[in-house]
Image (cartoon, rainbow, N blue to C red; front, side, top):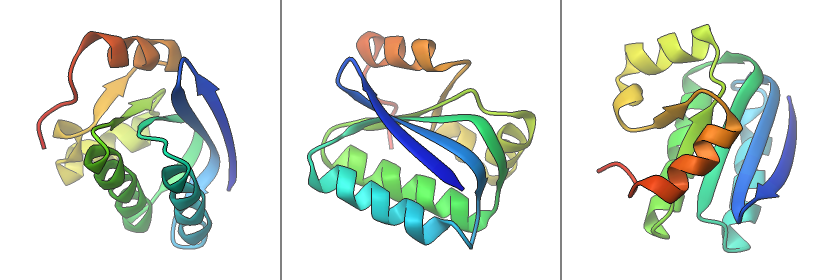
Length: 118
């Protein structure tokens, strides 16, 4: 999996390309840890190029959310494909992640509302 990281309006945008699964999750968590240690608390996970997510990948997204929320930030998921949406719905995680149609919408949501309740 390829990960690219950008910043838009003070929000860390994590673009995932490929599979977020048991093979790639450790590298992803290492990158998350580095971002959190650098003080990032507001994240957008761009799933436009995400091809697959397994339970380990969902765990990594929850890991990111937990640390973001501890810092009074949050995580938005943008451009989630049909498979990721189905997995979020099936797992019940759709209720805790703010899912937006695209990155600009997710950036705008950070300015609109407080993070959803835990």
